[in-house]
Length: 236
Length: 238
Image (cartoon, rainbow over all chains, first blue to last red; front, side):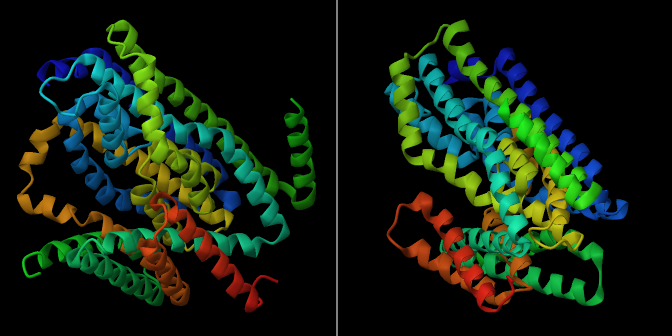
């Protein structure tokens, strides 16, 4: 494994990794600009733009740390720059480690094995990088048609779109939460507590009209849920 | 380019109907499509370079047969997500949000929560233009935060992790149930009935013996159907 990591951590891969990081950052900045230009027409005041940005930032800290902690497991397998390239764009620790395992077995070796030739690393990389482009190609080609469909529905009846957006969010997160909560009693507790904390904070914020609490609500709920889940591991 | 002419005609019609407002949101969509597609195209091309480099510059080509085997093996279980995920999340992400979220990744565990937090912080109704633009701010900032943190973690790597007290790692074992529960609460607190319905559908789908990767899309589709049906019955869609 040692020789492979030396190659995987070589300068060329670091350069590729930083180009990819730069594109991701560039895209985010371009979309901040696009959204900023259209904010007045979307009924967002300057103050509200700041609020939205703050809320996005606060809410992203917890998840980002979660992502960063999981990726450490990948570094030992495929080296730092390739991990950065894979996690920095579409793909998570779960999808990428399964892609890596499948790529390695296609070459006839096991991931992390003592005798891991550089050709096997190449097979792993092809599987991960080509596999990841599936989402990218579909989004690049079909987002426009999805936008057109949305426009048609919106023109016919804007209320339908509002209900669809709400229901889609509820459906997705009801499933994701269920899936996590059946993992065990501690997971269930942390999910339920985070949900309850969120509902309580949002109701209180609505009632007292406290807008800063809405910015922080997700961060707080996350912290409360994680802490409770962890603490219950000592008693359950 | 028949499309362009048609598009321009659409723009003209739009701005005639609802004045400058439509034309400015039209600019939002046009810019989003242009920059979204361009950045995705660049990333797709960039995704080919590292494997090409290891195969042909470092001279370690594993053979196209091996590559095809790996890719087919991977696509056989993840391929359906290439199509289902963008469609499932589109109604919540919108045009610009889709381009952002599918480039940066971590859609369910980061982009959607941050989008919804931004929308809720400015009291935007789901599905409105205000919600769409506010959500873009949320996701774009999240994408930036995430990539900066990733770079720090990769450079600091295992050293930084070893500095954390052990309970931090224990706590982050619960990051997913917490975030999914919290986001569900954020959307369900005003319509608790729909929240409960979605949870019942979620649990039912989770335990039904169907191919696991289509479950989330099925759950979203069923929830949309039930909510639309109930709203229609209440006469809210007239």
